[in-house]
Length: 444
Image (cartoon, rainbow, N blue to C red; front, side, top):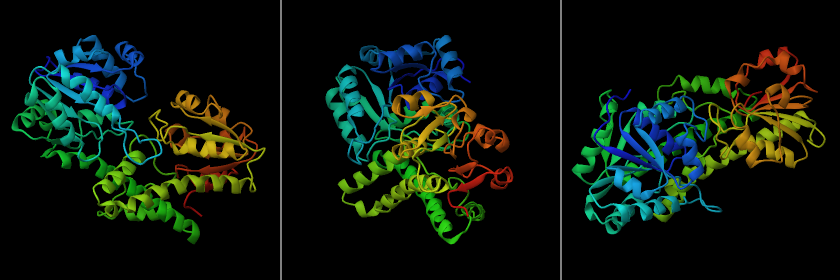
């Protein structure tokens, strides 16, 4: 993909997960792209073709476009303003400490740094997930601070990346949403996304607030669906029913579908938890907090799954973790990622350690991040190493490597064959036939 360089020159502000992915993939489409970050070490690594995170398939694209000259990185806003016709804002909007609301300081700092340097017509495009109303505020500020005035326009173009599938989601998204206030902004974005719309990918043109609401609405819906089936898991445990069979039966209803209907430990990561909380906070500011009050229970159900996981493990050990060894399989919040933000797996692991358990964790990609965040935990070099002499094994991230474990081989090194399947990823009969005491969330 990507032939000669295309006319518009793009910059990407912020080179974290979203920004680095967007920069590399837009270069792959044929654009000249300049990425910027205030973190000089990150820029040095990216310039050397090294990703600061794990994402399947992205590093070859990064390296290929560095080599062909379509992609560069810098720490200079002067260079960015001079180079770019279109500037994508891809900085983070984390949850404020001690609050539900989103921290908008990185987005605001971007406008503060970029706008005074914009001396000619350009389009600034927000991709970060922000509270509704942000784009209108930023557009006014951009026009006020930029020497180009109204010629420095703003548009909003939310991202819909799934970690582990980010390359596919960038190059072949299921939809493109653009929030614009002028025909010129719409024209520029249509030109940028021509390779995708030519494939038949729908492009939805709307206003600022609607475009801002799309991402948070999607995340709220997905979080609700996940928590719904996990609420049913709570009922199934009380009624001695099987939530996996319940989920299977529901999935055949076309009105419901099977995606995001997998019962287990629940959701984590850098998007769903903080986005639904920020959505609730913004609804309160708008005076419609009751409209999203159900999201409080969605969040509460999700947290209860982690508590129930700890309870199940403790039950298998006779009521106490003190002096017992626990092997944990998984640290990332989901497979095919090294992201440990709001990771259910690490939440469970640290809770058990706090209750007296000797915990050893293994993950195929997230160990370095986990060690930095939780040096109090022990870490193994393999699944077998992590469960050595364990009295209970917890499967908390459904990596393929873990789903395909041999129960006899894994059982050879444990002290007791107890396992809690936090993701309903294993075949209970196979593990029980190998002598394991198998428990799972929402199953008899």
